[in-house]
Amino acid sequence: MASGFFAVLDDIAVLLDDVAMMSKVAAKKTAGILGDDLAVNAEKASGFASTRELPVLWAITKGSLLNKLIILPIAFLLSAFFPVAIKVILILGGIYLAFEGTEKIYEWIFPHPKHEDLSKVENENDILVLENSRVKAAIVTDFILSVEIVIIAMSTVVAKPISTQIIVVSTIAILATVGVYGIVALIVRMDEAGFYLIKHSKKEKSFKQKLGNILVQALPIVIKALAIIGTIALLLVSGGIFLHNIDWFHHFLPTLPNLLREFIVGILVGFASVILFKLFLKVRSLFKSK
Image (cartoon, helix red, strand yellow):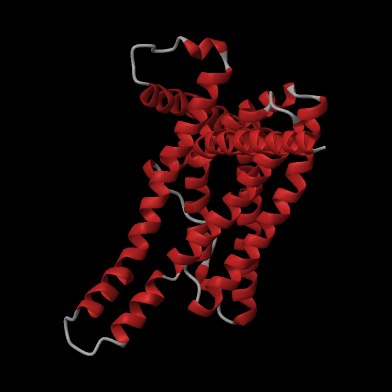
């Protein structure tokens, strides 16, 4: 009886050790997408009145949790009964990430007007409409990024028992949501913390006042920096997906460092996908005009 009990404990210890190790691997592989997720949601949740920033962020967080609840069971079923789909979805997601990263670069080079017309925001109802549109857009983007996070995490444990897969992937999904939106909450409240320090500083040019000014001035810089870092991360993650899952890319530019190879492959695939998408839009507009 005692030996059986200790054998069970030993099995649990082995499982937990395996889960911890695989969770670290999965976390490293999904870190790039989390960077973009962070940048997107910091941008979506900022720009509102201070009293509305956290409610908007909470609404996006709830949508993100719902996304994970939808995606996780589907991912586990595919892994159990149709594992080849994991690789297919991974590559398709890689194309999307490359497209999104390259399109951001394209927009920086050839800027175009934003869809939101803030001049029409005149009353409380308009503000709520704008909030809802941003929340919906953020949740849709989060759904796509969540699919990639789950699939990339799944790809690291696809050969493991289903119990390990469920624990590891669910852990990564929860940490991704809590971690990303917790950091976003801190970022969007930077200016408020800065104003608080400035208001409560007793002396002119005191440490509190200087720190408050830094926090206020840093917020737009941090959001812009996150956008740049997120774009680079998208291209690196997508390039890594192609290098590790498509045989032809295994021998592409083998003398270069892996990080540079991933970036080049990501931007090449992204550039090709952006061109094809633009051509598709032009062809569709020609057919509509006839």
